[in-house]
Length: 341
Ligand code: EPU
Image (cartoon, rainbow, N blue to C red; front, top):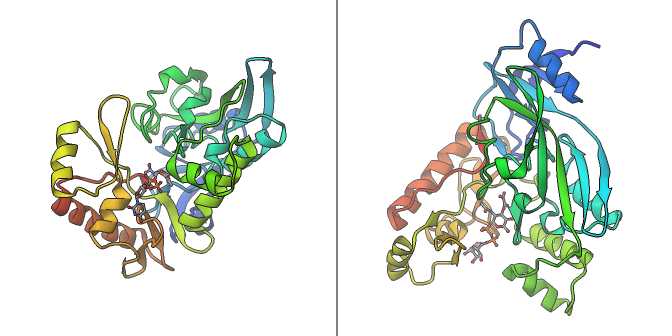
């Protein structure tokens, strides 16, 4: 069956920021074979492509005119291996991530619970190396299947070749726009050990009187914390954290600390420090503020929200104003986290 290339597709329902843009051309792909057909397409094969998953980590700054939007809809969830040491799961790139977490838990396979309620699809998860509450996707990812946009060939990339970093991977850099992730494999180690050190999680478990947390208890903690801090996109359009937490060396951290002794920072394994951007944005007075239809979330100032009918340009105007304030007060540049299109 040949693929249908749709024209003038509204993107409003396809992005969690709730931006009213449109795609001049869009194709839905349900298998690696579909992606190969796109690559072989006489008109669209060579066109630039933008892959759209759940639309939860993207800000549309206007209509997408020059690129073919490839809407990733590859489905499927299956167990490939299950032995005494680990369980290996294969997931279609179009599966909603939170569904993957709940499915594995329901099957009795623990290990993804810290990543509960992260919006978006499984295929987008490696792109920004999703992470929350002490766990990153790279801690569980085994490999990724891709289709190359030039050759149409399929390949499997092991996790060690994905160049994972903090909200970073080869898919955001060298491979950006060059291939489509069609499925991912996750390895869940046994015996399961809780990751419960993140302050918010530890506090929640203590308050609930849980001494030896089960996977379900951690799942419940993470869901409760996220629901209390992060806006529901159904109510307030958003793409999660709009900025990354800056990572600085010890000297810079100490200099900032001298002037701002209360700043929240976390030591990383390599001797650098992650500074809490939420704290800095709040310290600049932006918490709960807005510029027109673009707002700063009250409970988590790292999240910018669409207060209703904002354009991508309005969100960016607020983002630039925040970046200016933080630069002036702390001498640091905040990097944006979602993909800007
Ligand atoms: N903070 C403030 N004021 C606030 C809110 C937070 O000072 O109003 C400080 C607090 O001291 C807190 C610190 O900021 O200890 C960190 O806050 P939080 O635990 O919410 O984490 P975050 O660093 O702001 C990151 C991720 C989130 C992820 C959480 C939990 C990034 C860019 N964001 O936020 O990921 O859910 O940790 O692990 O790394 C996302 O990427 O879209 C996302 C939501």
